[in-house]
Length: 80
Image (cartoon, rainbow, N blue to C red; front, side):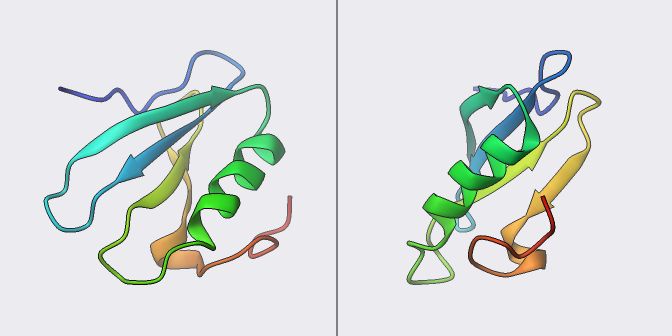
């Protein structure tokens, strides 16, 4: 299945990425980035191993807004 990274207009999208096989899936679309960051952080702080699913956020232009692999684990890593 091909996942579209671009969120609908005015929304922020969370994509789950499996670092082992590089597969990805749609987690959901959120009304604002703050809400999406909180949901992604909630999942990312539960990661125990580098091979666990990573939750990344994308904006309505298809741009990667936040990637736990770059920013680190946990809420508040980037200002909301």
